[in-house]
Image (cartoon, rainbow, N blue to C red; front, side, top):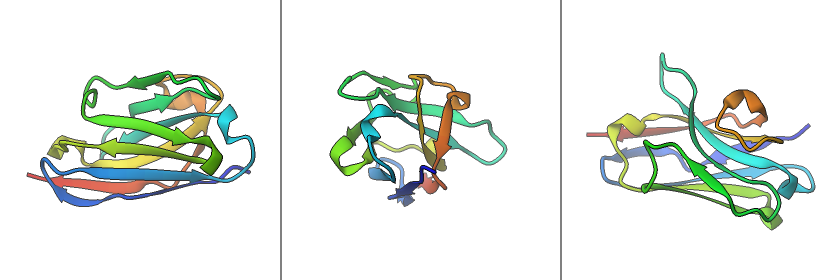
Amino acid sequence: QVQLVESGGGLVQAGASLRLSCVASGRTFGRYVMGWFRQAPGKEREFVSTSAAWSDTSTWYADSVKGRFTISRDNARNSVYLQMNSLRPEDTAVYYCAGGNTYSNSYREYGYWGQGTQVTVSS
């Protein structure tokens, strides 16, 4: 019912920046908590960041990305973004945006997912 589409991934060198975008279908986009998760081959899905619903400006970051990544959203454009700076090889993963009703760092609390966008960081 709700479709999320990510874009902006790519192959970059360590230290570079990327900005990921996620555009959602549907009305009242602001009602959803929006988050970013990532998954590397053979690894468990990992929390990256999340943004609270409505006009709540609360944000939450995994320790591994704090100070390097920034989440933002534009409810009028049904979009959420992830600005990634100072990328490291260990950031290599498929990045997914997700929507849900609970402000959480657990992927199990999100019911809507995008198809993912690949981010590869070379050393």
